[in-house]
Image (tube, rainbow, N blue to C red):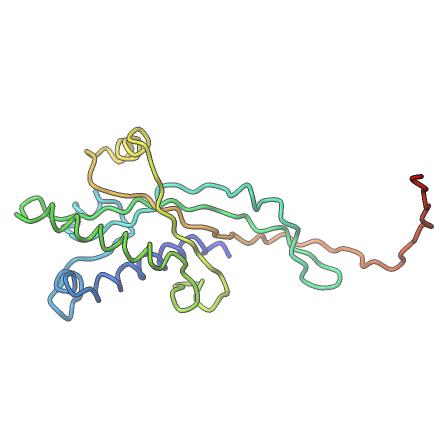
Length: 204
């Protein structure tokens, strides 16, 4: 399905949101029932600032093809029909806590939020079943979130593209996301199998 990218983003954001809202130390910030006003947004940190939002930005900044799975065989839909192999993707998210600069404990709060994200995605790196959101809900798909080690140069390039000074953040790679093809092909079933006599060769 072509909505798999959006479904993956919703899945990741929702899982993180639920974890923050249920944490004893953070529920007062994120859970509306406890007066929390912070949000988990799919927008960039800049967009959150412009919208006067505090919380956590889970921004999809890069999509890459998974070449290792690209050569998988076509999907067989029936005895005489196949579908082109789905496009396998790796999604890269920049996860950035955003707290107003006027908050006297802003730096501490951002580090606490990010620490919680690191904890929950370390303990529960595979998202499946009831975790899946959007059009992924009810599917057998399994998503894996992996913390990426990025060099200072790599992370600087991302923030340069945002036209914003570097902020405390981490990058996660989520795999594998599949975009289904609409192309199908009619194939003829095997009707006759021709066997060839074997030849025994002596090694002595």
